[in-house]
Image 1 (tube, rainbow, N blue to C red):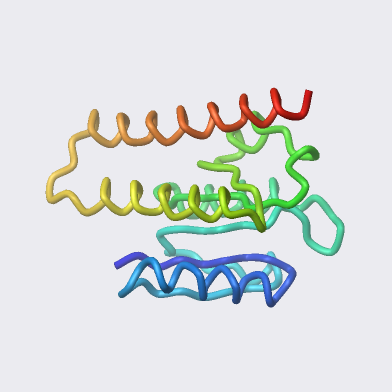
Image 2: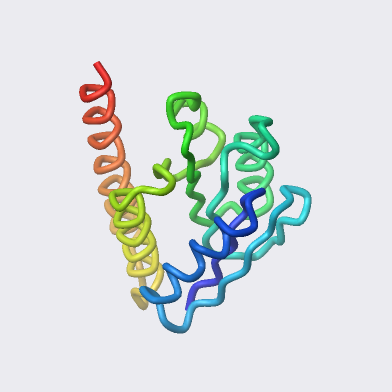
Length: 153
C-alpha cells in the first residue's frame, strides 16, 4: 500500500487527482494539501504542483521534500511545463515531470506510480533492479520531453 500526498494550491485539482488515482490504485492512502507549508513527512509518493498562487515554489518544495524523504517518489504536475527547466527539477530531486490536465499526463502518472510500487513491492529488491527501474522511468520521461520539444518547434 502506498501513501500518496498531492500538494496543489487548487483544492479541486488535488481532489480530482485523488478521484482519478483512487480508481486505479485500490488500497492506497491519499491526501491533498493546498499549501506547501502543510506537507507531511513519511509519504511514499508526492505529486507537487509547480506554481502556488502564481509563484514558482515547486522546485523549492521538491528540494524540501527530498531532503526530508530521500526514498520518496516525487512527481511535479504542471500546466506550465514551458516555464520549468527539467534539469533543475531533476537536480532538485524530482523523479518525473507530468503535464497537468491531459490524458497523456494521467496515463504517465499511473504508469510511473505502478513502476515505483512494483519496484518497492519486490521482496528483496536488488540495487541494480531498482536502478534499472529508475533508468527505465527516466528514459521514458526524457523521450516524452524530446517529443514535446520537437512538437513545439
